[in-house]
Image (cartoon, rainbow, N blue to C red; front, side, top):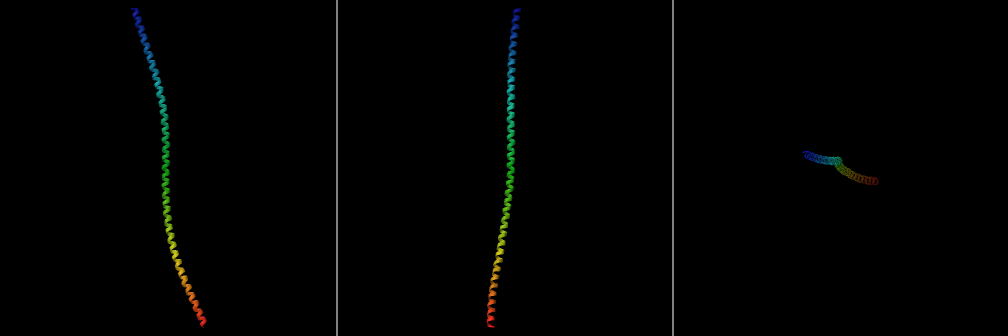
Length: 132
């Protein structure tokens, strides 16, 4: 009777102690797991922040490249316009040169004709002066 009850109580106490130790071990393991998860979250948060920073830098770099590309396109367009205008100006200068050269040739021809006429008139005047 009493011995059996005492033994039963002792077995029950041993069993409760074993359960309590098992639960403590599980609680400690859960706490370690919780710490590990928190550490992983911190690491992942830092990685995500670094990735965000890198993404932001890349976006800024791409935006700057885009602005440079637009500026280069504008400058290329300006150069094409300037080249076209210079070509037109060169063509106009060539036309002006040809016109002025033609006018100069015509004036040279008129001057030769005038010189020849003057020489002819001088010769005629000398001949008339010598004859009279």
